Amino acid sequence: MKNYQLTIKADDKQVVLERILQVTRYRGFLISGINAKVNTGTHVGTIELMVRSERPIELLVDQINKLIDIKEVKVDNSASQQCIA
Amino acid sequence: MTTEKKLTGGGLLFNVLEQHGVEHVFGYPGGAIMPIYDALYDSDVEHFLCRHEQGAAFSAVGYARASGKVGVCLATSGPGATNLITGLADALADSIPVVAITGQVATAAMGSDAFQEIDIFGLSLACTKHSFQVTDIDDLAKVLHQAFAIALEGRQGPVLVDIPKDIQLAEVNGCLEHLVNLKNKVKLPPANVGSAIALLNQAKQPVLYVGGGVGMANAIDELRAFAKTTGVPSVSTLKGLGAVDPKDENYLGMLGMHGTKAANLAVQECDLLIAVGARFDDRVTGKLNEFAPNAKVIHFDIDTAEINKRRVADAAILGDLKVNLPALAIPLSIATWQDKCQTMKAEFTWDYNHPGETIFAPAVLKEISDHMPANTCVTTDVGQHQMWAAQHMLFDDPSNFLTSGGMGTMGFGVPAAVGAQVSRPTDCIIAVSGDGSFMMNVQELSTIKRFQLPVKIVLIDNAKLGMVRQWQDLFFNGRLSETDLADNPDFVMLANAFDIKAKLISNKSEVTGAIEEMLEHDGPYLLQVKIDAQDNVWPLVPPNTANDKMMEST
Image (cartoon, rainbow over all chains, first blue to last red):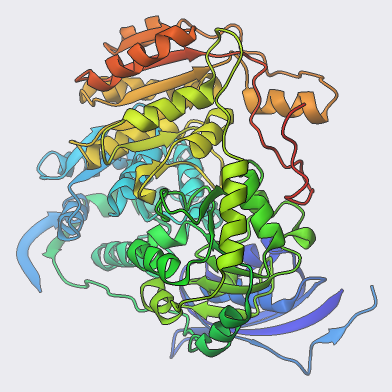
């Protein structure tokens, strides 16, 4: 198992958080933590997502990026680390 | 631009549909979508009443696949909306542009467990490319335009728009603005053409692995030019059938679980696999880590997420196939490999000799394929008949073979044929079905009757769930659990009840005349073909097995 931290920028649209969570679960990643907030001025949401999986993180990044309301997905390499499961 | 004319939300919906060139929709009315059906009354859009919302969704899918246009379906809230879900999942798996409109209870009642209320917006997340719920009438036009743009943009797919009843009734200016032209949202890196050309030049035994993305990208001419210029032997996925010219001497047929022996052996031996609009599906690869074990991979796709998903690509060519395929079409010196592939193709050709008088389904389907008019569109259901159709019928365009590939949805064939016939009224449309699948959406015979659609149905009848029975025999020690359908109805009488001419054949001597009669008949026709219940689909690559270890008989 590896731990990863993603920082996701998304338009503040209906169910965007549900979409991210659904894709994360379906693609085989467990959620260790989440922090989400919306900038009411720009209507852009920032979601910090801590996930763990045996699958490469690129598979999840590509799938989240396909969601229509997503602006950007970044993997925080400094926060991502090997976890001895 | 907005007009001064006041419309209801329902009226605005049809304005926007007309603006997008929609002429035909498939649907079923109900309480929470009544304002939209009231507006339909004044619209030029032609509505095809199906007899189940799943039928409407599959008809929209068939319409889209046969025509290249967006398919549109309508359903009411609650059970109407949930009945669409299988069709939407099918469209998502096969990347089909569909816009589904669902009625919803009024916004004030939402979240109160109202009559026929279901959170279809929430349910849509896993079975659509995107979805919307409109809670402000001023957003309706923009959302509808976005729905069409998203359905067609990049890798195509289904979009659902859920419209509460009060939004359908609300008044709004007739709005003709907000035509959305989405660019590819994901920025694609420059195509890695240089490394791909190096791989091509190094290859001694390359194979072209053609998927459904070629037809979706409208890149059939470019694909055929690539195959001709390079001379690379080609194989096709189920959904890619028709993209390669079936008469191309270097074409080896379908690969995968029920692929041809030549196609699978060539892929297993190749040193370069050129995947074009294909996604290394498990039914194609068999045991993944033994699939094309010695091959480097060039992967052409529009969807970044398909690259490296199941097989790491040595060169990824992202973007439009119409642009990228010509950039790599270079002559190659692979005559020895071409000769070997052509020899395998000749050696492992189909054998239509079949003892006895019972009808051999592969021979029937080949005979239909040989005699059907040019530009015939064939739909299938799912099971043995589907694989026999894929193996033994030839198609010159992917829009002439509509089959549920990714989702493998029984019940697809007849309603998809309805949609195909509506989109192409002068073309011959043949639904090849099985007795199990046929009964799953048999109510759509009523749609065929209502609109006098001249759909031909070839019902391959073994009174079994044949593919499951085959697997039970092969892999579950012959324990035949719930696969006997000996109590099927009288299919000829059933068809006649819908004013559809029908005939039953059970002897080889009847085949040629029956096919001729069916193809010459002006209206709808059902040909029931009784076959031996023990007939199996061969070859078969057992699950989690390499593709060169195929079974060819019991």
